[in-house]
Length: 168
Image 1 (cartoon, rainbow, N blue to C red):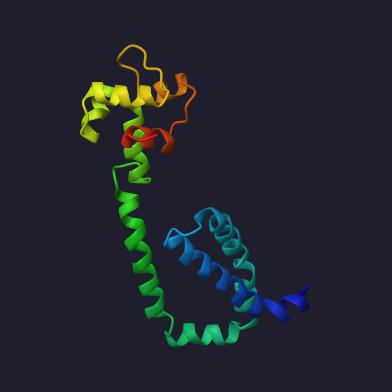
Image 2 (cartoon, rainbow, N blue to C red):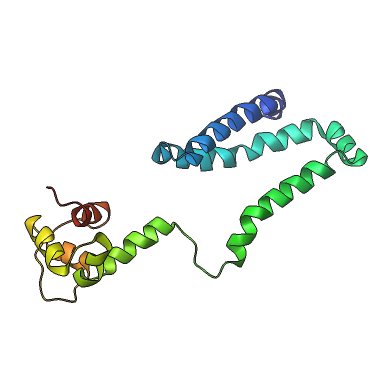
């Protein structure tokens, strides 16, 4: 096994880095996230093993970089770049998360009277729109999610679509 790792450590590092980089680009641009998310996370974790083997095999050269200070600038740049992303999240008073999901969740938890003005509708117009799409509205004060559940309809994007668009 040691011979196999010594022989293929660098090759695995290159291949897994390429997979991680390509899947990371797809995730960054929100293209095919469902396909790439798990692949990116798991194979990036697997990448740790061949990187470790690569460092072990090339320790003499790596230690030379350390002794000569050639790693100082890349390490500082990497640390500063990491902190630029991590520090705002670590010091934020909000719980974080996707703001679009938070907004849509707030809409679902609102009542017809609260949500209607967001879509430039009166409460009566939104009520008529939802009833036309098969929603059964009970007494006032129910959240839109409760109305959808009581009507056997889906919440989430389907509910928001039914609220936002008049056509069937």
